Length: 314
Image (cartoon, rainbow, N blue to C red; front, side, top):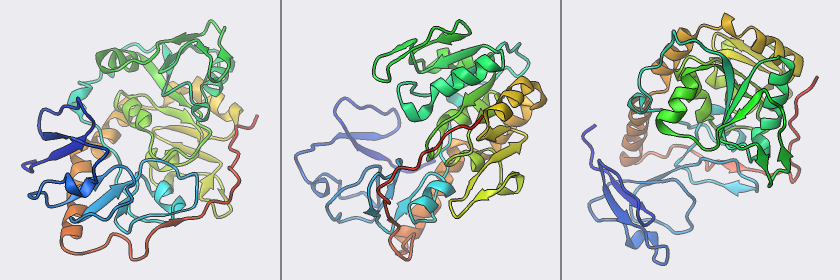
């Protein structure tokens, strides 16, 4: 978009459109920022004060009580609210990386996309849901034997592809009827959701974290809010079904053809492009360079000490 970008990153990193400098972890960050830089965009916490205006994009869920810098940007409204903030920018994807989806392609199975070795991603739940719905599942991002989580999957309806990217992943998504994504944590954003919707795949998962807002505005939510957590029991939209009930998700999976894959694709093109993300960040950069703070008070997260137990019900 005409701006000069400099990356300060680990050794052997490359980028075709930007200057790449090697980060020296033994030196203060402030000594490695070029003089001509106007603003520093951090993607990890630092302890030191910087001589330049800066923002932090926070990509995780904090596991401890924490005070964030005033210029912190979160990945979704839900993640921002849970961490005491209000400013967020949705991630976007570069459609050139994925090509044009074949929305008329014959679709024969469902898919799970994510690190199947992480318990909170709940590949077990995806396997169980698709088995009971009597449909095939392709797992992108996992293997049949997972030593860390002590999982060995015998189910013949599941096929594992390991870590797949680029054209290989695109081909698999082009043949899928939908993403089965019953996560058991508050997903800060969920790139798998956007990638899947881009290929016309509706989403069948749990209404935790950012998932309800990614599948449509809160006007589309049906179900009761749970106390002050902002959590919902169920979400139905043109782009999928989220529920805490296994039976409800199984029924939705069996009726996946009722969700229009063209609508899913157009929805992502309208809201989740990399250009829209860049434009949103440029607006934030301008505010900071004009001397504003993104939050009047520093966002603060208070850890209760007890991890919330999220689960699926029958």
